[in-house]
Structures are given as C-alpha cells and as structure tokens.
Amino acid sequence: MKNILIVAFVALLSCSCANKKEILYVQDAESYNNSVINFSVPIIQPNDILKITVGTLEPEAAIPYNRPTGDNARSVNLEVMQLDGYIVTKDHTINFPQLGTVSTKGITCQELQELLKKMLEDGGHLVNPTVNVRLLNAKVTVLGEVNRPGTYNFTEQNMTLLQALGYAGDLTINGKREDILVIREADSLRQISHIDLTSAKLMETPFYNIRPNDVIIVNPNEPKVKSAGFVGNTGTLISVISILLSTIVLITR
Image (cartoon, rainbow, N blue to C red):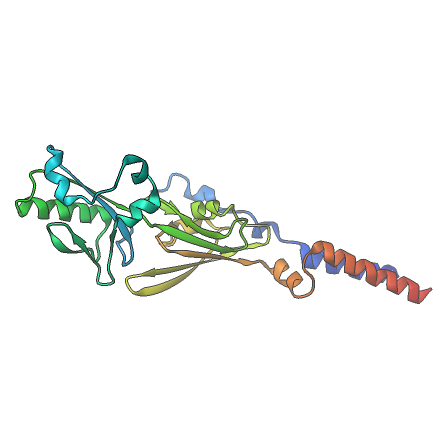
C-alpha cells in the first residue's frame, strides 16, 4: 500500500511541476546591461492605412492636399480616421490629392514624409510645406497560453515582443517560455521565428521589435501538454488519484 501511495505522488508531481528555469524571463539579463539599443522602423506594407497631414504657413493653401476629417470630436476617433486614411494598394501605392499615384514600396513613414514634401516643393504646389505620416492600423495578435489572447492595436513606432505580451496580460504559468512563435508577413514573404524568453539574447533578434500584423503564439509547456491528454487540470488529477486509491483500499481489505 505504501508503494502505491509513493507511485501516485510521483505521478502527480511529474504532471504538474515546472522547472524554475522554464519560468523566469531573461535569466542572463545582466550580461546585456548598458547595451546599445538598435531601433528599427517598419516598412510600409500593402493594406496599411496612413494618415497624411500637409501644413503650410498659410493653412488655406494646404486645404487641397488634405482629406476632410469632420469636426474635432469625430476626428480623434481612430476608426473614423482609418476611414479617412490612405489605403496602400497591393502594388505599394497610394493616390494622393494633386500628386496622383505615389509609390510607397520599400520606404518607411518618415521616408514617405520626405518624398511627399519634395514632390510638393519641386512641383511648385507649396512653399516649404510640412508633411506628417502616421500608420493608423498597426496591430499585433497574441494567441495561446496568455491571460488575454486577442488582437491589439498599437500606435508606438517601436514596440517590443515583451510589450506585446504585456498587452495580452503576460503568459500563464502553463506558457512555454523557451519557444515563443512569431509569424511575420512582409514583402510578400512569410517568416517564422522561435524566441526564447528565458534568454536575454532575444533582444538581439530582428523579431524582438514587433512589426504591424505580427502573430505571436505561446504554446503550452510540457506539464500542461502531459496533463491535457489525460485530465484537464491538477484538481481533476488529484480527484482521479484519490478515487483510484480508495478503490485499491476497498479491494485489498
């Protein structure tokens, strides 16, 4: 009977325990203290929605180059701004007032600002204009073993993988921290990367900085996978073992 209890206890531990090294984030963080931060800016992609604002010293002169946004109360609504924005076509172009078709292929929002400013000046449209370009529909999807899976909009120009996981309420205790899957589609290519959150080396990867439309998948860790095939959770496992032991006691009396 004693041996049966020991076997049951070991089975319980093997199905529910996770190693400390499987839980802690960036365990070698000290080795990256005071390291240089490499900021990177995403390239404009098809289906991006851009808000483009043109200004001059004489506001009336810039009116033909700006889309109407309604009253101020409506213009601060993100969904309304998206409806009024410029959608990048599959050919990497936008149709801009007075300038016609403008290519956005391979450039960032900052570079598009400079391009439009130059086109407006060189074409004799405006004198010393200011151009501001913002991406309106940046979003990241976080799925799997997180507390709040879903799709999240963001306005930051540079957002990290850790910040994106923060939007989703962090990983659950059952999340596999050594193998976070990041799926990225850019320039007609699909890239897939496996990130180890327990190592500070994640900050060296190009996937550390999130790009619009990235998908992050947190798979379950080994204890969760083991328990999922037999019982739903630890409480159920304890109940099953308790019933099993009670049955054995009754039979061996």
